[in-house]
Image 1 (cartoon, rainbow, N blue to C red):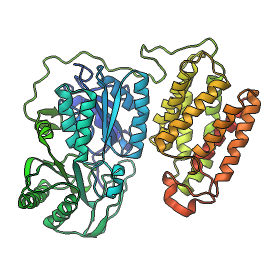
Image 2 (spheres, one colour):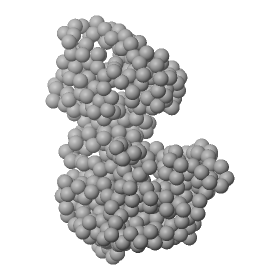
Image 3 (tube, rainbow, N blue to C red):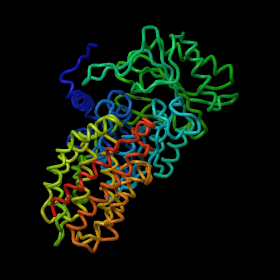
Length: 567
């Protein structure tokens, strides 16, 4: 596969460079790494901000809809990878002017966890956030699990309606409701004809035989519901409408907006064939097509294929879908140009800093910072063991997640003063760990550490009492965000008994407590080996998970062992 690129490692950064150079009157960077972008008037006028984000490779999806009457900011991840919580937070800070910020993005695990961590960071800054997830990919899950569906091209309708609502001055609750209503009334179905090639890998994300198609394929190449011989444009469209009518009210008198979307290398002529048949079928049903969009709106690099998105309109959504909007990739109606670009500067977001940019200090900080630096220096030595454990049950990336996360934490915490408040140490560690790798484990642990930081923010010391409080908050946040319960064979099975131990025996000497925590964790890991994994990728292997130690639990055990060495 031939690509017009430079160094694959620089692909995303150079794309962002090009965008900022081409559209300086419409976009500006909101973070030092330029992975958080906002429109030039973001964070001004007292209006609700809308922040989206996701992996690169889907242009103009996500970052292409930052503009007037659309989203106010975006966090840009690597190709098909989630943006970091810190990048999302940077876009949030730059988008807020006191009215709050709506997070509006596709329903993908890594994105969800990192946006959740960013919401925690925003809350610490006094910024209100709400979340609406795009879940329009109709074949990615059955009706009874519709909330787990992927978000694909139909999310563009929500950008349009929510953006228009924010632009007219609606409050955060109203903008959020409009976005959710739009998502609830939108469905999408797609077909893939050829794979995409990741720039860094140089290999296809999936394979299709010559003359084959796959119905229901995801924008990252996720498997669809039917693979078979290529059909005609009319036959494919008939499949789309047959499925969409099962869940949408496409009957006499209904009014809709349509989006016929090319996935990257499908000729526009072929998209119009799909529109032609869609128009015929809906006309037969007495459905009015109020507005139509035909072209490339959400792609997957050079994947061949198309999708059809349908939004069933009501009176208010019709008004909002018709409102003017403008971004570098989307123009509708006449948008008044900015007579003067606001002078608000892109914020320098420091994960360990307060709103004033100063790190809180305390007279008796304890040994937390010292222990974190020592432990994170040694933790990467366990990378090979964790990689091998994870390869048996997951995707094998836990070793690099922990090792790179530990290095990032050490770098971040080392910049803090020796008398930094313990909450600053925990917050800095959480953001650094979550941002180092776009993985579920990193986001969960990072979010847990941010929650732990909040729980001890008012403490003047860091003793066993504060440790017990922080551990309880750490456990609770991981359970809330990950959905795991004790007994599901996840890291929660080890955190929970250790948290109970620390709470019950907090009066004991630190060295004794640390040794007991290691013994408790070791027992929990051994007890869990015979169980079946119930959550995450490990659950996908079913009965084969029995007899294997849970990788995340072992990582937490190794952390405790390294901590115990400090006593």
